[in-house]
Image (cartoon, rainbow, N blue to C red; front, side):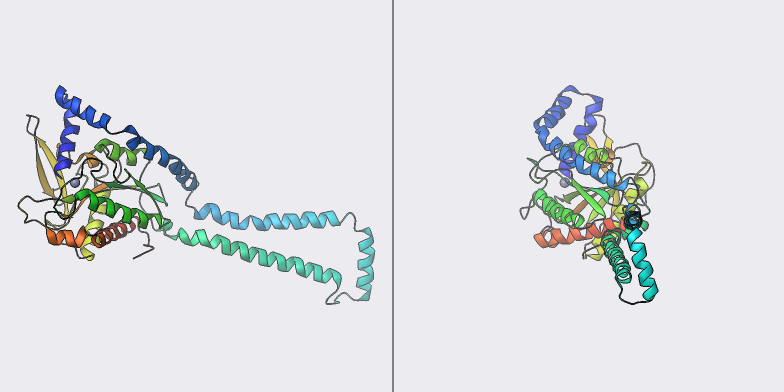
Length: 369
Ligand SMILES: [Zn+2]
């Protein structure tokens, strides 16, 4: 959270110029080995291209259905051509057939009858096998009709952003660092999404790497992602606060409503998993008020406050063109919160809740849990 503020300040100062700060932010970006930012994206782009190829023709169901029909005409054509090939040379056979006919048209196991039967049986068997092969991907893509949302799936590209990273460990409770909790949760969530054919998960950064705020948002923007989730942990210096909260893109933005809907799904899933929900609904908006002296005050508004304000929110949401939510998984300053949501088991439980929320957002059926 504190680090997020720092990052926001850096972002805000950039346009308004003060030289020392601009230099700092440039150093900040420059210090990040550019391979940390670019390599994963470059590596992901090809898979994105593959995804587009897969999805552009339509949901995977449609292109495959005609395919299942294709073998039949092809087979029929082949049979016809085989039959056609036989015909010219069939002068002798014709006389044989005449002989056979003269012996009895309904001779049950004659050469000709068994040949025809064999071809028909082969054909029936072939078409059954083909249908069974096709049923696999068809079954996998069933939820496509239920998905009302973005045009980019299934599979939907979902970007998971492990906050902080590199030299920035986030907050440190003494029990666990924020970045440890974030990366464990991200690993579990990406695994869940990877195992679900409805999703193509992308991470903004690998474990241990650092990344700029703008670079994180760009992973979603550059990949035409359908959804973005940034994972963080909270900290309270008075050591009294606890619970889960999340931040949606603010009213007035094009992605506000979808972001709010996703945030509500996350709160519902975390609540069902037993999390304590903070505030009126667990969904809030954060605004940074410029004090005019290079400092900012953060203002928190409840989701029910729909007034459109000029202040910016968290950079990773502000710069995102994708419906995006930032979660504060728990308070790392609270031991009970840490035990419940920052332990290895707690991180997996949170990841499962986020996964269920993502499925609910797209109207797909979870494949696990
Ligand atoms: Zn944080």
